[in-house]
Length: 562
Image (cartoon, rainbow, N blue to C red; front, side):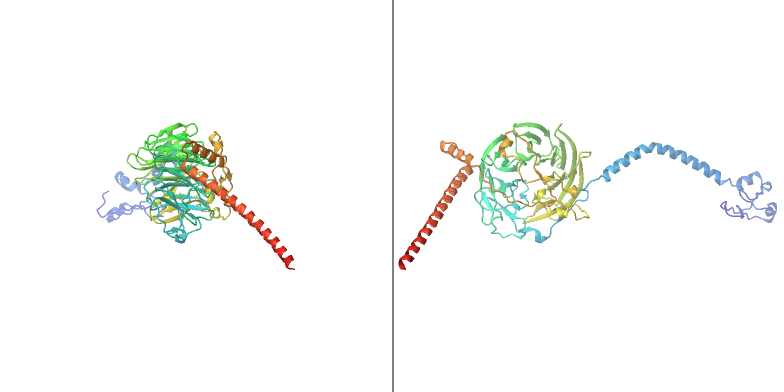
């Protein structure tokens, strides 16, 4: 059969009812030869009237068979692919869950700066180039190193004294050189230590309500360093034990009560960048310009572990963690800032993070109660915080607080000074050029009730032992207190050097030995004070006796007059 050029073939779907599957338009003769319509499947097919060639052109094959065959082939291939990809997909899903769905109470910690009227304004923050925090905070006072002419000074403000600070506000100004570092005593909120370029360490007693007049005479002066003193750090559990490190590459550990250097560590070949006590004060870790991290037993005067830390030449900082691992901040060979976690048992690095390529020294602040580390860099506008865990990858980035102005220094409030009613877990005091701005770190919670999981028992102000016990070799953990009802500051006893030891040192001075300068001065002042007290007592007794005598005489005169 020949079909003319006008023939049009149109394929219809199988469910098109009783209509034809193919429509043809041909001449009359051709239409006479096709007496019935051409249909598909169950419909009538005029196969007898078509040639084999026409049958091949016009008869469609059943669609259902083709679909079944293709679907079977697809399923077979999919099963094979699924078997191959199943273990890989499982691994990826597990990694994804670990990375994204890590359970943590501190994933949503956020920082917030206080309002301007709650800041401390018009403070001339020191411009000294030493890489210290320049600020120290406790639940009663904030101390800030300031610029001062003719020597070094720092200002001490009660926390509630906010707003503009008068330029004539009294300062602590006993040093003859710029002050480089300050730190509050953890066992007495009114005692603060300071280190200076004048090679001296001084201990100061702050009055109950803050300064009313400038303080120039320290309670104790500790002299022994031959170069500037850049680090001071109090022992966490023993009363009156202080560590100081200077540019003479020497560490002294002092008994402040007797003003004696009990331990001298001369094991650093170069400048010491940082020194930190562990939780119970049995070990210290130091970083040095020779790029080594050292863990030292100070009473045995020996290095337990020495690790090659960061490769960069910029200063490195180190802090002990609760499990006696060490966290360091430093620089790579390409001057990229790094955060690293070290296992002190085998001296290996178990985690390392590259943060950015800025050149400001990173200052780490560690919260042992929550295992959160806050990292702020000098000249940065951000505070990053990380959570430390016992499982890989060990250091987890949480978030960052950012602001517009760079920070000159940073103060960190002890845990007993935070506000538990607002779910506050940390408070920083950020130093600007002429301002101190508090920053509050909060865990958002819907309930206003006390959150036990955020506030485990924390180290209190009571020392666990005396200085003599620690020097004899004893170790004790900090005495913990509950934060449930909030911390109420107690009235601290006045700090006084031990009288017997001072008398002994005075005798040594008379025999020709050279004692510490501040010790003799304080001994003389103590003896003069006692003399004045005795004189006042005798005067009071004399006045009382004279009053009695006058009264008797008046009675006698009255009787005579009668």
